[in-house]
Image (cartoon, rainbow, N blue to C red; front, top):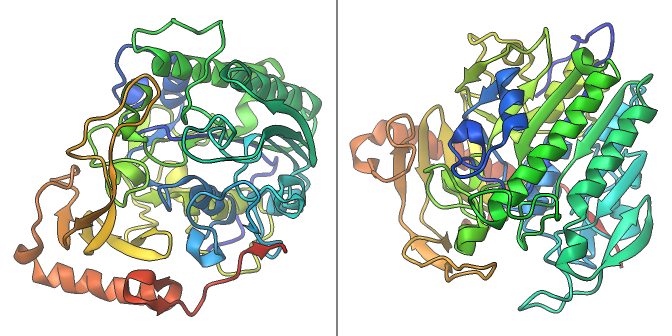
Length: 456
């Protein structure tokens, strides 16, 4: 589903910032209160902000798999959030953004959270990256977890375990360490095209902030963490300017999924969308997307065209003239829209909302059909505070519903009985999805699902 043949004469450098559990409403430019994100807001002022951008699934590993491969995560067997020691991870048969750009002469680096398997065969250096420094999975997967017994959490450099993270004081160093590594990477690669992937571990809980930002916001530690993340992005963008790389660097800023709402004052904001992380509703899937590339991407523009994480890979390989993926992918390139052509509507047809391998909703234009399903809800439960989760339920029963997201972005008014023709059209789309990818709710097996990587 990608097109080829368009590329710049001088290959642009590419940076992807991918924050963890950042909600749609967690930036100054999207309405955050009691703290500021001036560097990210400036990124939006100098680029284009896309307000209708969806994560392919609303959970860590699945979302990251979709970003890096351009596939619905259940197509490649990556769902949920992979645990330490998982026997399943990203397959060597899948081609990541890093794989494809590396074939085109790019130097590739990742600094931050991986979460596509921690066995050596699953780590970044085996999947297109030249450099890796960071953590293999979420930083709450450690011996300090209040419920589960996880093994020690180590920082990994290359393929080798380094120091163990044993406290929040050490976890608080992650943002600064990642920033310094990213800045150094830019310095060392200023004369070569590079792809720099920065999946910051925060603001995923547990919150951890360095001394230089502790107490700086009026929002408590969550605001402090966002201010430090904003500082990090500012440092990296400033390095681009100092090295004279600013004009020829495409910068993408987004999040893996919506906020984990039951953490109260340690959680972000869905920006008014319904529910949050781990749900099929917009609060789980709708995340910020900002793209900046001077002289190519229009500055100060806001676009409401529908896009998803799976669309980033085909867009980047098309822009750079890199090899196309050998396997079937689900993303659609949107180079024209990226350059400001609002007549371009790459993803008006449909989008699937899966949780694990259960099809819970489908989308066409602004219409969203949600199927009856059990799932997480935060509504009706008081959130926790001081870093402790409040109650929520994983097995709430949601009824079948149709929402007009143009008029009802909060998904509050079920108009299922009012538009039978639209329901019929969306049900036909859902049936194609089930044939292609399967549906555990209906005990259906997909015809075009690939196996993940596996180890004994």
